[in-house]
Length: 116
Image (cartoon, rainbow, N blue to C red; front, side, top):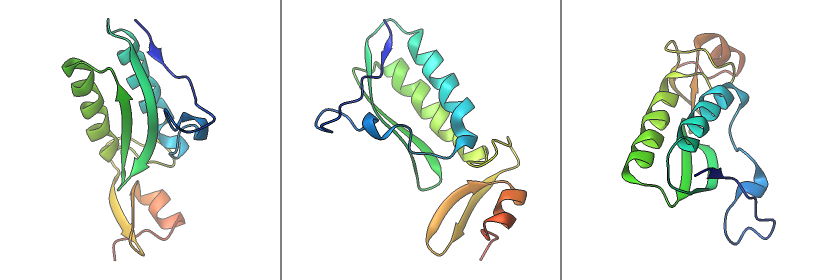
């Protein structure tokens, strides 16, 4: 069964009308997650994809335990991938003015997210 991404312009059933609400550095990671979910036998409805507290958050309905485990794994993996450039394993959570982002050192310097 496929992963279903059917944006609802009324925002009553899902928030995908906003599109993905994260920086482009996580596009590859999110695409890989969607490919993995698409391989599973159940019909999974995509409700929202966003950045929250420095990690990727994916909200779905109809997910099996295996699907939810896959989502959890990719959400945890996002804590090691720069939100801006996609650099892998050299990124970490950084806080600036109360905002949490996962950034590599180069992007953190550009955005003034060096450790406070």
